[in-house]
Image (cartoon, rainbow, N blue to C red; front, top):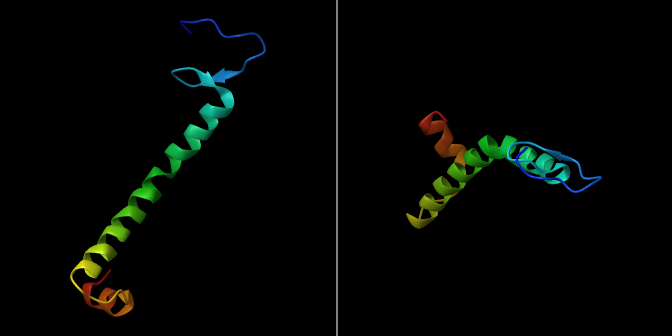
Length: 66
């Protein structure tokens, strides 16, 4: 570490952060791939709505092979 940490303070990660905050950030980082897929799906649905298509994806998924 390059700076002092107050007494009785647990830190972790790089850069060092208060341990509880570092754990929370790590958990969010691990969820990014799933969140990315959800955003892609929401963008696909939004594009369909903007084109005036139905959101009934079951018939469309059968046609597209998704």
